[in-house]
Image 1 (cartoon, rainbow, N blue to C red):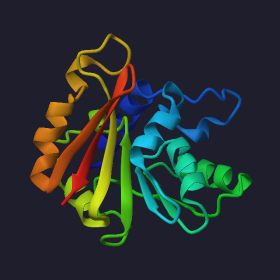
Image 2: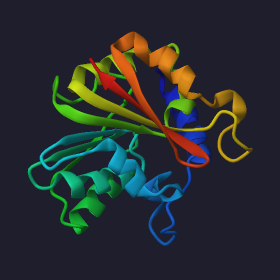
Image 3: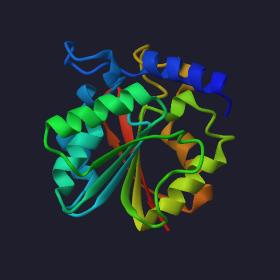
Image 4: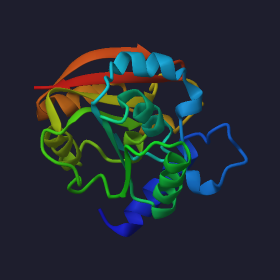
Length: 208
């Protein structure tokens, strides 16, 4: 993916995601859909445990990463990846200020090789990111997720409902649960569950 494509995708991402309610924080926090949902519903469905490793791809402001870091505790680890240095820097500062030393915020292009070891993660989250990418052609992303997840690991994706209202990205960019299943099942994942989040949904896949 060239730099112009990455920049265009990022601009679409900022239009489609929603800023955190903490409006007085720096713009370097990046976009987040976290405030749109009840985090308890999301994280209960992920079943994260103390000592787990959580991977947040296209982490933006890192709200999901910080919540996961509190759950997995000091014995666990969180990898938060985003292509924008200012966003990652802001997340690293927030983690430090909250005493969360288990967060590794990394500048990385998630469409390329992920800087994460094989079979090292229990849960991978991709929240309101995929509609900004041509995921039907970008096979490397899901093959990389398959590589870094442990057998039986969970891939959790949050996206805007395809049959929803005008809230969110344009209809032609939206991906339904069936669209994602058709794409992701080819990479050794089995659909597990879909959770209704109102305007959005959470779909979960288990790695084989």
